[in-house]
Length: 444
Image (cartoon, rainbow, N blue to C red; front, side, top):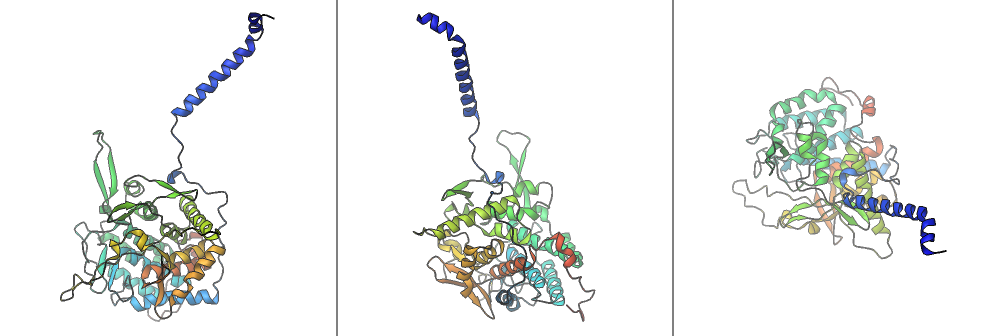
């Protein structure tokens, strides 16, 4: 058969083949025009192997003792004005630590560590003291105060993330114990919470579009802490949700051992450094219950830790918690020179990284497995009866012996989660004992 005749007889097959090749070329061209699929934190969904949430159970005897060790911190550090020191014996506090104190009281009441009468007395005193705080020019509480005199410490700037934690505690209080609603309402009649949100300039294209941002600038201005604070800050007004959930410099992911997690980009004196944190996601689980995003991020972080723990040849541990810097609260006091020690805030994150007691207890409560149990056992020796729980272990395995409100509050929240589940639980409200009509002569 001649070549021409062969081609004529195969023309139908050639047509099909050319059509296939043309279609394939079109598909390839279209795919190349599509944006690259890169997972972002906004599109996270739960992994198929996300573990079942643990059911509540009664505390063991040891766990009940640990709760009382943690509460002793607040017994020792509550000022006559009703608020608690952020660090043991150090008379300063901030908005974040005050939220921790309120959460500690809520958890202690849930665990019957304190009576209803003591709880109401403490909450009433704390809310009254919050109402007495001097406000800054914007009508907001400042970030830091002297705990004994309630005078502003350092700059009068507020803290949006710190306020977010305080509002989280107040919202939980309103649902759990509505008898304190009038006292909380009095605070919001004084605080100009709308000043936490600012309207930015128009875009460079001069379009009539404005961007909303947080008015405050702080080291906790990272994705995880914004996500945590957004639960309550977004309730301020219609622009607040847009401001708090929009990362100021965009959100990036980083690959650690093949697992994608948010790069928090914590602020340091040398700029924003790649970093990983777990605390804001763990707090969400303990206090409000996980959403898909916070739960998935926490699960991924835990898998990274578990894999590194189980390797025969151990990789260096990755810290997801950092020692919080303490202000020089003596500088504003007359006739008292400042402490001549290097400030924690001047250290890079890798030097402040710790295996923290608060994170260990939170992992132990939320994901109960061999790894979280081993981590909890690692920090068990850090309890100081009569004082509270120490902060954690430094990278060189020495003890970070600071005893603070945040650590002991999260220990109490974690143990309350084990016994009762998340602190803000609408299905649990019918189990909450009613508030006595009078503190005098009240019984638990």
